[in-house]
Image 1 (cartoon, rainbow, N blue to C red):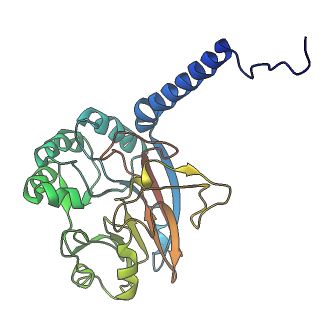
Image 2 (cartoon, rainbow, N blue to C red; image 1 turned 180 degrees about the horizontal axis):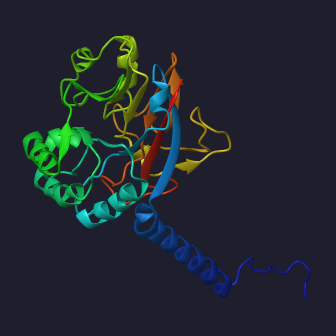
Image 3 (tube, one colour; image 1 turned 45 degrees about the horizontal axis):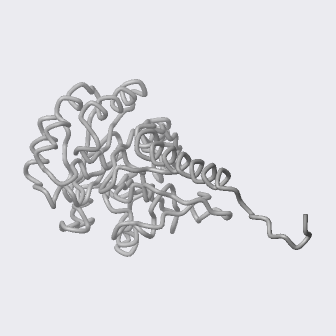
Length: 289
């Protein structure tokens, strides 16, 4: 054969093998992000140092759930399954940090029966989707599910331990000072705020809380891998994040001796996909700081 004769770099058969492989890979990835990871609940254990927490309350436990987003992508039966894990953990309190629906307020009715099966005290705050749909309808469902909704309000959980909840930042009227007006000076206080970026406002207002628990961002739902960890220690980043969920989109952060923790949420919105960002139930153990 002539040394200068041209040889094709790829046969037709090899080309179709590569195309078929790429198609199968893309299909598997699409199936995983739609059918596997959104259903793969992660139970994240977290120990939090709480300033002024009495030693007698060392080891008290809270479960946080957020961004349930009952809709065509997340059913009441899936919520009930997650609450079975809450029952197994048997925390002292359950906190729900907003966004109970996607776009239809009436879907909130799906939280009533699952919540009624729980025995521990339940506290909730509203998220932006709850206000965008119908705050009153969502609130009625929470009440019927035996959850107490905190709107710029504080409540005593135990001796020298308080819980305060503010209204939604995006579409409501959060007032942290009013929320904490009944909290005694020096009390250990946990703050519920749907949007994690409210943390900077709370710091600016010099509110005397120890930890803010938030949701809203879903952790981004889709997180791409990186070679270097971010400030929260994750080897990934979210290319798309919502308003007021961009500074503290995931995990635990500390600033000025205070903490903010952003839960990745249970549900999905507006697309039914998760990748590298599993839905989360946060199991929190309180420790004296």
